Length: 58
Image 1 (spheres, one colour):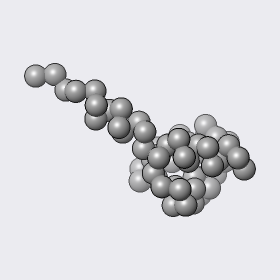
Image 2 (tube, rainbow, N blue to C red):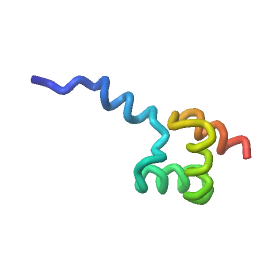
Image 3 (spheres, rainbow, N blue to C red):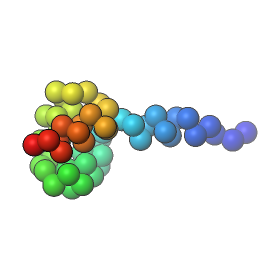
């Protein structure tokens, strides 16, 4: 039985505040510190789009 891609797509939409490698990736991608990413996730939630939008407007 094939695994549906639905779960993978939902995972990619999450901001990654919970796992260190995701925080590190986002920090490197946006050119900010890991602490800044963690604070942003806390402020706007775990949506990758919201986190990236907030970091882009800094």
